Image 1 (tube, rainbow, N blue to C red):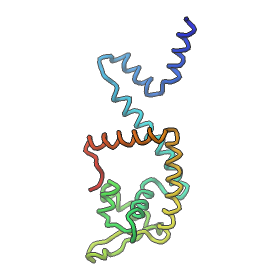
Image 2 (image 1 turned 90 degrees about the vertical axis):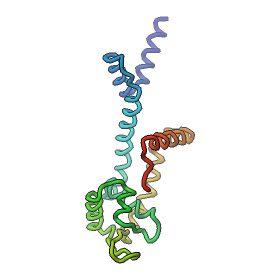
Image 3 (image 1 turned 120 degrees about the vertical axis):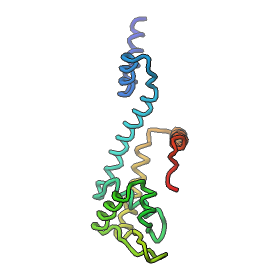
Image 4 (image 1 turned 135 degrees about the horizontal axis):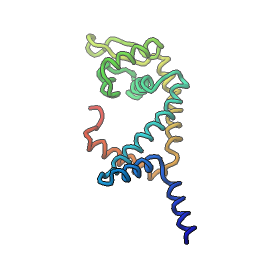
Length: 180
């Protein structure tokens, strides 16, 4: 019977991830605290780090970073004529105006976007994809989507749907519904 106990303990230790070990330390040191949320948030943080690294590899292979990819992808998915006002870009990418200006400046210097006079009012401006920017984002997006599939391949389609639903509900509960 003793060998069975050892196997169970070994199995438990093998199944424990880093977050479990941290939680166990807190439970040992502060048994008065409910550290359950720490586990959820800790795993999401670790998952974010792993996913970001995996996504960044694709962007970097094209000389981009996540920020520049985000702007190009936002313009591409906006539909023809693949241009948005700076304020619409800010709204979709959830960054400050200063940050967006820097992103646009860098992409413009690379010849991937250009500032144009807003055709609707002539006073403001829009940011649009150049032919080079359109071609680049179209090449990257297919590889990006394939990469996303690879990153979630360890989950069944049902698990993917459940996680998507739970995260959508959680974000809404925290007041984060996305751009207007």
